Image 1: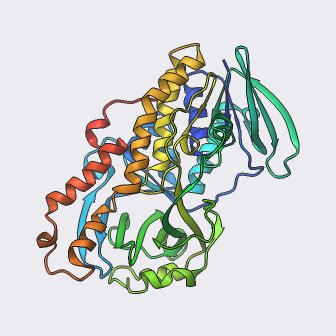
Image 2: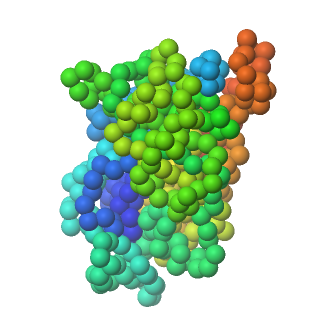
Image 3: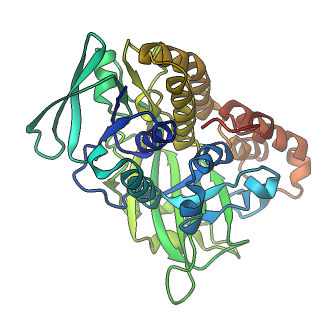
Length: 415
């Protein structure tokens, strides 16, 4: 049995490593001709690190990441609302890491090539079509840059891990499957900046109606001054100029700086930090409605191809990694890929649909929404008089439970 994996992103490469650990042959086909450290920051929550650690990846991740100590919430006036420890600092058996997405991708790519052999991690191949022939799947590829035909490849099964614009998703679900714009546009970037608070704090400040900012460090000691690389985003409601969901589109400072101009806190001057960014990207927050099914015979979907969701709650990559754990386990338990795909879908389809809906309605930053609404966007004298801490804790724990990283859900290893 050889599994073909379309897409060499975080989900596809983690699946390849999980299958290799279970001695299941596989081949990865990535559309990009060259793997470069693109993108901005990403958080790996304890449920994702449980699976990555089981694959022996934690040392490589730890060497290029920051172990997140806490998440803290502030209003746009810099008044403290709520904080809680994260990862091992919160008593989990696994850490939470903040890392540059490009660095994580490099780690996965290099280790996959080392373990599986470079002949099985193939770049420059974009999936365009597939079909079943008896007990096999035939996948057709073109050059990722030029579109020139590159021929067909046969395997026992095909997993589409080819992202939000998945060719396999479009093939399995032809017709109307639009990107759905949330009404919110994000501007994201990374900045070289001195450490703030604990040096490992993730902060949320403001709210969408006036401008919300999230900041967290992803790399320590990046220069002779001992500065960190800070990942940041600023978001608010705005009609999209580009509703394509392209997270690599360059952004302009003048389009959003006004939304965080007042956030000059004693411990972090957010507008100055944002203005000093290395690069800025503009991203309309989009997702898609959950699908009724992912698996068709010997073909199935994984990660953003299966359940694209708003990038909230540090959870998009985490859900793809949980997909991997479920799928690898099912494939290891049967010689019938179609049966494994059906069981994987039964395990993950409803769970991920709930996360998609939670990210739309009640993500972790619902804490900021509640304070904004209850104060009328005015400074407060006593946060306990605005909202009891028990209610703030309940909001946070509710999302963790839906997303599968509450402590009660994380017992035992799955990969």
